[in-house]
Length: 106
Image (cartoon, rainbow, N blue to C red; front, side):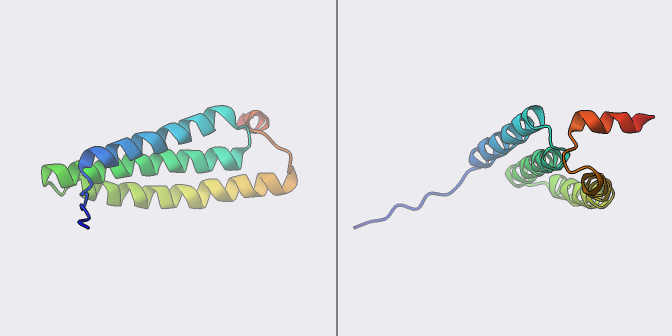
């Protein structure tokens, strides 16, 4: 019996990235929990990173991978600040929604 090996093409990665981005976008639009919304935004960000890496591989250019490195550094800083704020709010008001957080504007 001969097993055929299938090599994933950049198109597969782009389809996966589009699927992940769509799941994240639906999560942001549907859910009202700020923590869940934050995770969906991170999912969307990683879908874009996957697109950058797939296109960098397809074009034989390192620019996309370099961009992903900087995006991940900025995302790490965002997680530290954003997650700290969200967790502190959720500790004081466990039933807080995204609409309640709009009151923080002042």
